[in-house]
Amino acid sequence: LDGVRRALEAGAFAELGVNALWLSPVYTNPDGDFPGLDGHAYSSYHGYWPIAPRTLEDKLGAEADLDALVASAHARGIRVLFDVVPNHVHEQHPYVKDHPGWVNHRASDCVCGQGSCDWGGHIQDCWFAPYMPDMDWRDADAARTLADDVAWWIDRFDGDGIRIDAVPMMPR
Image (cartoon, rainbow, N blue to C red; front, side):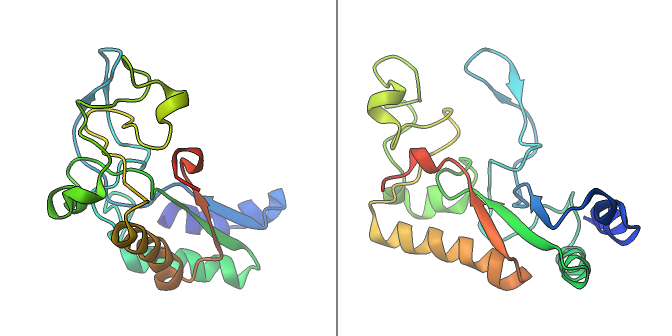
């Protein structure tokens, strides 16, 4: 976050004509590697495997760093968009343990594209991987909490908008 802020303040984004920054997910993600369906190991370096709904990944910086980045962007007329991940979480996320009814199926029941769990018939309830629970947006408590988590990022950090990951996978 500090590197982005420094580039912003050095004029790198203005030179490019940038008027908005779209930040990849900044949630805390699990450490380590996890097995992919293809036998390769994968990590959550990209931010799309949240394990805490309202906690900033410390590898990116502290909340004060994100506050400074947003303030610096706004001072230059640049908007900040947060990429949010309300469709799924990592198995280490507290909602999986504390609210098992908020999760669609069990991993062994339906992993996207595996066996009888085809993408076409199960796009709104399959898991991306055995360690990536799909959240059940048909549950009113889950939907309210997940929506509140998204709003928290905007409200807490004065964001200007969001990009919602995996929208096709969520019920309408």
